[in-house]
Length: 290
Image (cartoon, rainbow, N blue to C red):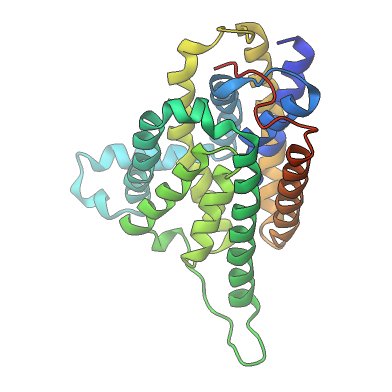
């Protein structure tokens, strides 16, 4: 991998990680369209550490408060009913599905799951799911001629059942094209949470999963055509760009619909299917670096 490739891929990672369009799919597609080698699952997981570092800094006050209260609640019974202490446990509970499936499906994640036809399918299917979830949320928020405005749930209403459902949705993002934020936000909206609450828990839930995945994949960094230097460079680029994007996205979702992302996902999936069907692009374009 050249330094230019690592710069472009780091930029793509930072731009797409927090948007519901799948960063892993875009890394895979960028390499395929450019005629580069597939950067591989290890490169993807490590560069995601950069974007998660941006999440930690952006939500540093929330994260610090949750960790502090959760840790103190282990020895102080009175704190166990505190929302922040409970949130600490809910993040742990929600991280279980992706931890189990990530290890179980490791070979598939690095191989068959990176087939461009599967990515095209997940882009379209999850785009439709996100569109339905967004439409239901909008209907509750604005009401209608014969419908009253419906109050949606906040993170204060989060419980173990919902936390596990969020976790299962996050685990679906092990397949490139699903999108971690897209799947968890869709799940949250379908369960009746507000856009902001769904996004906030999605980002908090991703921290342990992404950091653990990146640490696990460190042993494979530097193998094949992807060396340590470009990987670290791409991770730094992803961090800087990711911080800007997350700040913009949190403001965007407070008043805007997800429909632009829905349309983009569906169109990209259709174009990808057409290119593969026409023989312009091989479904296995680029040799996997993993």
